Image 1 (cartoon, helix red, strand yellow):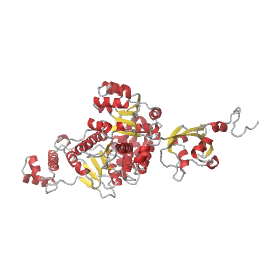
Image 2 (cartoon, helix red, strand yellow):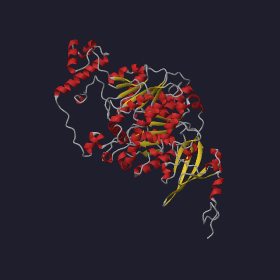
Image 3 (cartoon, chains in turn yellow, cyan):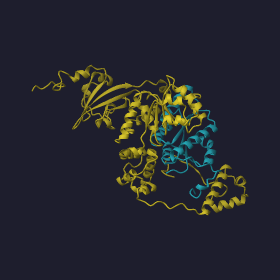
Image 4 (cartoon, helix red, strand yellow):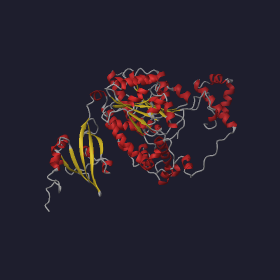
Length: 456
Length: 155
């Protein structure tokens, strides 16, 4: 049997993949399974400014000592696992964008593993002259690092619900249609909004998150339409409205006018209810629902992602900056919880456990008592006492403290507010162990700069 | 771990703490006044419902407060962050700074003039929303309204 020429597999009927890639104006490169550069086309050479001969054999990884080019071409974990993926990287030799490279990885996997990866690069990134002029480079670098944190990796998981969800999020990132994220409290709606923003076409502009329930309508109005407000800025790419149903209907109408304009930012909303339910309940204007909830994505609750729990635990422990090791027995306790508060609750539990663990691994005993009770490993706490005297003393303390706070610590005025004589107030303060001299025990902490306590 | 809501004010020797003394006392917020960004990050870690007020100096090249805002947002996304600046900037600069700081995770950015009642209203609103988000409940009523059902468990 005749040996086909190099680059022309048997049965390829004359097709030469090298010449095929050589003609395209898209920068293309091929990595071997050891992540070494095996081929790159002239468009790639032109973009990178690197001759192919110099690049051949370059190991593309994101290790600390890798060159910026090697880091930019490093395949993502998903690509190494055999799934096509895309990543945004600062264009070398820059360590921060813009401009950026959108690197698409197409793994070539067979039954016995990965053979190699074909990559292509699209250079993106408008030059943001206003920001370059006005914002220091250090702040822009912090902004870029922050943006780089919100990738699909944050949402990826092996659970069916997670896989389906990530697929929907990728689709949302490829469009500029308004998105309505519906999910239980703590399930990660805002994080999802940021992933969509940073993977989408408006990533060079800013994402603004507005907590509609946490700001009064006047403050929302000032934020958007006030002097120097967002509506007058050309820097906003996406607006994330948290619980838009909390806004008065007038404000919803104003937002509708702004966000349906052609040059307006993209809108992503997050809510615990579907847009239709919000409209039916009268919390959302029907036209707001019709115009601004084109894609509705359901963020899966944590209980539907049980198989992802170990990965999420590791990620959250790393994010917290404390110990990252956890005893399998502790993971077992976490696995039987209902997680009604979803990722937010899991993050809070792990932060508390990590604090208790100090420098060592998180053990079962470091987890909160109620979780261990639920796992059948501890007894429930006794019922709270119904004794009257301690309750009345606590009530008296709170009233005295409130009066002192309101009068700036003046015992005479506080006694007046409480309707008692000053000597009686002082006697009660002494009896209750409150600080003498009409001053409340210190309530604030002024740190001298070195260390903050891990817990109060 | 939750507990009393916490207000972290990164404004060494600045007036923000004084401007918020009254709502802090009435609502029984624990007020922390770190002098450095890493200390503020340490306080943010403690799991309480938290609002962070950080003064940003647009003239500083490194702007440590900007890094703090990003770190807090990434590590503790439930902490509501308000960035405050004294700088009087042109409209374009102010818009660019507002957008950049919000992209870093700030919920609100305030430039002069900052009216104390607006600041108090803003922080109170954000704290209420944060308590609701973190605990799933509304904040405890201010001290003048005593909830007898809660007594005996606090002190």
